Amino acid sequence: MYKVLIPEKIPHIASELLHNAGFDVIPYKAGKIFPTAFWNKQANLVDGFISLLDNRIDAGVLAKLPRCKVIANYAVGFNNIDVAAASKRGMYVTNTPDVLTDATADIAMALILAVARHIVKGDTFMRQGKFKGWKPDLLLGMQLSGKTLGLVGAGRIGAAVAKRAAAFGMKIMYYNRSRNVQIETSLGAKKVTLAKLMNSADIISLHLPLNKETFHILDGKLLRAMKHSSILINTARGEIVDEAILIKMLKEKAIAGAGFDVYENEPKVNPALLTLPNVVLVPHLGSATDTARNEMAAIAAKNVIAVLKGRKPITPVNTI
Image (cartoon, rainbow, N blue to C red; front, side):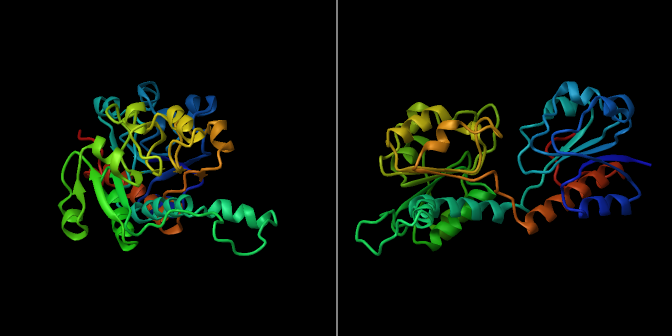
């Protein structure tokens, strides 16, 4: 019987699918997948592995899973896995694209609105009993209609954010390796250089995968090119931005504000961010809807089942 390592906290649909396929499920607690007892008794029995974003799976870990044929990452990103090392060992790596597109785009739009219209400040203001009636200059924010949204990355999620922003009357520009003809045709989006986007957009939303090329792609030079009135939103990966420089700019009010769903040293959050009044912080909620998480669990399980049944995975990251 094939044995599959699976996180305890993901929706039950994953274990149900695996059990129905005739597989034995080995549950693990998030952050505690590799205790000594596991290595001594079970690691060499694992045939498939559903991994979480905080599971750092490097070549050393892979070497301790000699029977494993597939690592199904419970996320669209897979920067936590050494894909090249997995390929060398004949292991498939898979992810969960498409199913979390709308959920993540919703969070990006929520952060845009929260920062632009001072939603968190307003909530705090009310809870502290400071509201004494309407005033013409109370918490003035940015109106979205007529403003320009700059997408750094225009894949599935970026395009979904563009669609939402267009409904608010925003103009769309984007930076991407290839053209996205769909958003150009349907939304009038314009493809521009990254430098042009950074110094022109009113709101900049990040939607790039994390890899060697995108690490700190938004460096000091590009960040400092932003308009003083602009807002930066990151629902992609924290390491895409030089967070230290961005924090310095926020302290100096060199830009209007920022919204974070991800952080450079996640799960640790730079203490300085917690003190800044011009930021909105949420705890990596991009895919946090029942619908998205259930579909993610199902596709992860289906990828494992496909590989262990001798078929190609549904959403492969690598080729074997």
